[in-house]
Length: 170
Image 1: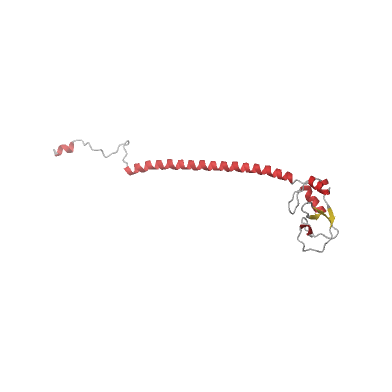
Image 2: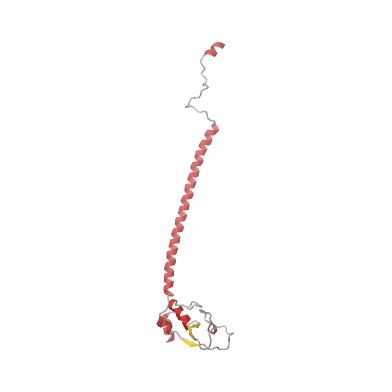
C-alpha cells in the first residue's frame, strides 16, 4: 500500500502555478481595496474644495464688480457737485484789500495771515477774496484758479453753490 500511494497521481496542487490562479496574501487584497477607496475619497474631497474655491472666487468677482460700478456712479455724482464754478460766479464773489490788523493771536479763520493755497503770507495791499459762509481768505489769483475746477472751499470743503453765492452777495 505504501507503494501504491506513491505511484498514484496525486490530487494535490502542482508545483507549477497556473496563470489564472494567483497566490495573494489576504492583507494585500484588503490594502488594495482600501487604496481604491482612499483614492475615490481624496478625489471627491478635491472636487468639493475646488468647487467651493470657484464659488468663492465668483462671489468675490461679482461683489468687486458691483462695488466698482457703484463707486463709479457715486464718484461721477460727487464730481458733478464739485465740478467748478462759472467764471461769472467766481468774479462775483467779494474781494477786499488786505491790511494787517495787528492782532496775530486771533484764532478765527478770517484772521489767518497766509493764503492756504500758495502758502505765501498776505502783505498790506494784496487783493484777497473772502468766501461766503466760511470767511476763508485767499489771494484772488489762487482761489479763482481753484474755484474754476472745484466748487468748494480748499480749507474746509464747504460747498459753494454758484446761485447761492450770487444771491448772498446781492
